[in-house]
Image (cartoon, rainbow, N blue to C red; front, side, top):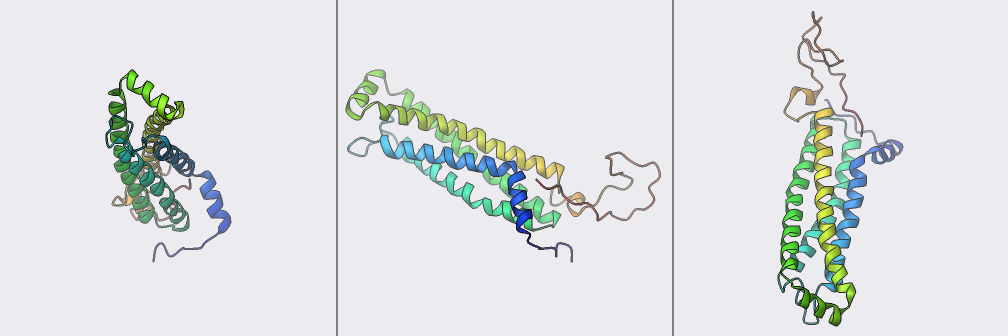
Length: 213
């Protein structure tokens, strides 16, 4: 049965994680998410627990998006480990597509959160901001602005993860429903990417292996 190779080599796992750019993007995403919900939870509410961003639900929404985004990044480290351990091209392709779809979905929420907070903060006039600074200190203003800025940065991180996953889908195992996912090349296609004039056989070439990260 194809894919019976489940050999676990600690050195291979460590090397695979180190060479995987998505791992570093996830780490940055975790840090940025912590900054977002940390800044909002710490200084974005008044003494009555009312959001300083135009008395809206922007604070609650931003905190929720940040916490779930952090949990997503932590959870998808499991996918990175499974990708290294399993050798089945079909499963690897599915993992990459699920990763890309999940991050595209939550990246949309990062975009909504950024637009929501930026718009509500824009509606807070300078006089009200001066009152906030007097009552709650300059750090409250800085925290809100930092939360909005890092929400935007998270959009870029999430998009980058989607792009890298799609890149590995195209470059490596291919789409899970395509022949390439099983290591099959089109009849007459050579390994160099071109087409041989006279193919020697029409049987699938099962020697293809998806490249490591």
